[in-house]
Length: 244
Image (cartoon, rainbow, N blue to C red):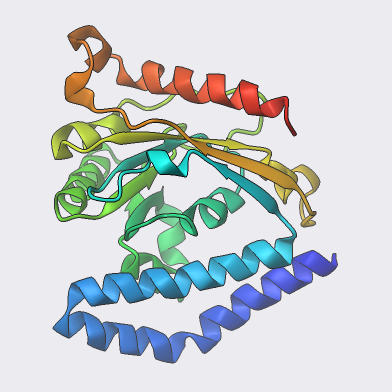
């Protein structure tokens, strides 16, 4: 219970007390959008590191050397926990927009920080709106921002399995001509979801695979990107499961 109170209290206080900072960020953005992106990244990274510390999560990050630092990338990850965003975002080397469900856009104050960080809100019930989100993500990547998406579409509640990956997620990398980074997350649900509503100290492993350059793949594999990347993540998941 103590960890839940600490994390919830910190998040609420951060959102309230950072209101003046949001105004400063807005003013910075009017003069220099890139500086705003970098400063928002630094501020939220600090906040997320505090959340990780208060939650007691111990995280092993593997394969970070596989993430190119000279180009935006599309992170493709499995999704088991709300903490997936917290634990992965603090390691991104450049401004990175996460694709979130549409309902997150209605959360006061949080939605402002998410927009500052180039997050996009996906309405999976509206095909036309969904395509607009994909096009917006492609535009962000062409302008130097990385994108992270969890192509299962929702948090998977079955340990050791992956839901089918939505093919649309991979159009972003193909159209933007940017590499894909498979991102495998093990045991993040042990922080919160496994004993909801309590937060518990847990050991999490996050491994980044080697970059996948779509144009370098055989033509047949390019047509089956979703199952190809899913197989890489599942194989890594099973490997790291044995070490927890």
